[in-house]
Image (tube, rainbow, N blue to C red):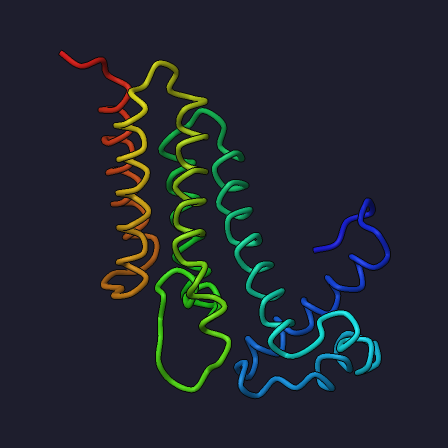
Length: 200
């Protein structure tokens, strides 16, 4: 997560958050202990407390990082395919579906799952609307770059529709990822193409 331009303190915080993320995915947030995170990060337990104050503070940082990571991955998948709208849509959708099926943190963010004893969920689910808005924004920005003159309201509706459909397939998957991504990418092309056509 850290880059060469980050400050030493930011690199330290990123290392700790990455350690918390790894332990959460492996065992669930309920099982995460500050001492265990410190061990994984290669720092002292006191350092973790100094940086985040409490387990709740670490949860907040982990949730923020996960949202940034997810939206960044969506943007990367779209950008990698340039003006090929269908290929970009397929890549972004397939990556989202695959990531959500493998990563309980992403699934919690995208589905606003609640219940159970996992105290991390409130930090993730309060950001569900944010991440859905940002994911739609990524689609709008990308489609707008490659569909100049498109109707902005129609473009926004298309992006919001695709994002909501992706989330519905995360909540209740029915087909393999590739099959679902293919169908949704085809739909995305139709919706974006409709947005690009001038109204009669």
